[in-house]
Length: 219
Image: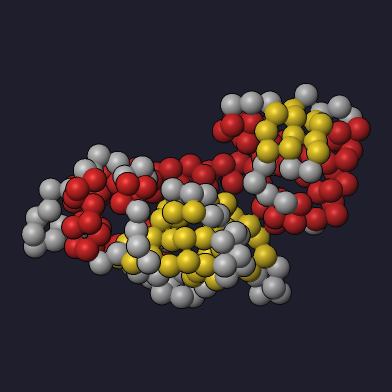
């Protein structure tokens, strides 16, 4: 599978690294690329994770499945974002969650231990790559804080409003489209799908929002 080097220069993980250095860097790191179909498992809970995934296209969901089979959507990750770093850099490499392709995906994998340790060639790009990786890990922590903010609300209505306000702020508009369908939204909110659908209808009736499918407007 041929990599588009020009496309890779646009990824945050490779910010500040010259286009002509990328082929040598990817070879040095032992990177590889894979494609996944919708709903295909990328990493399954309890799998050993040694590689960081970078989303070249598509959407990836981080999910947690409990002992009774109920699935909770933790984080939605889109193009240019990375995943798996929390486990590949820890003392325990086993994933505590699963990563699923929510849409057809193309993923670039980088072995984490090669990213954070300078190679014998002392490649000039390596320190910049480490800086970029740390910044992206920080961004992921912010995503998780947003999730905590949403699910810590006391009522379902407050959870929905907190999520919608985050989306409005992220898209800099009171009218916006969310990336989640009703089932995915319910999983993200740790709620029942029918309860979420019903509450959205009540919120529109009460003049808090207007929505059509996945497009919302805060009033």
